[in-house]
Length: 239
Image 1 (cartoon, rainbow, N blue to C red):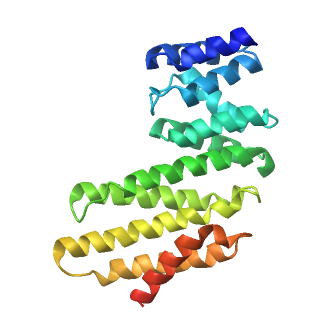
Image 2: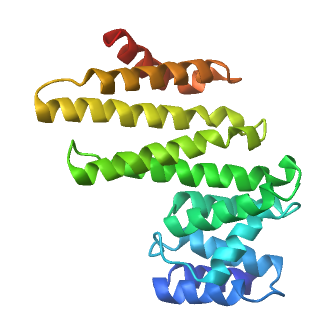
């Protein structure tokens, strides 16, 4: 155990290429042990140089398989899920979406897809936030970011029917992110043109209202206290 920890810690402190090479060597071994894969996941999560890299097919498949395979050890699931959500990329999103599509159409029980569903939700939400934060106004480039953000938030919210009961409470945040995107579009566009667009303002207001309704229905709506306050303020100001 001491040797394993020392080796893992050394790789965590190594450069990005060395760390990814070690992880790849573990991932491509079909006979890899539980401890070896946990060590590789620890490296992925803790090496400071690994920030949204292009993953090898073996690493990508091993990560997706860790959250998609029923009965996987919870520690492995947590590590793999945490990495993919924290390092949300189009590569990870595409792999998760393809796995979700394949499994949801095969008659598999929803309970066997809870972790896969929640991982894809987290990735879509984070990518929606990233796109939202790049919106700057009514220019062509920002419109692309707007469309991408709305698409990500909408898809994330649409996954709620597949969510586990204990995960469902976080799904309204996709609506909140969506509403914020609409709000920021209305605000930044008005600042750029000198006049508010009533359709854009109404769209943001309506989405905040949907968020209020869904957030109020979760078991612990207090977790959304600040978000609820923002939504109510915006609705009151634009009724």
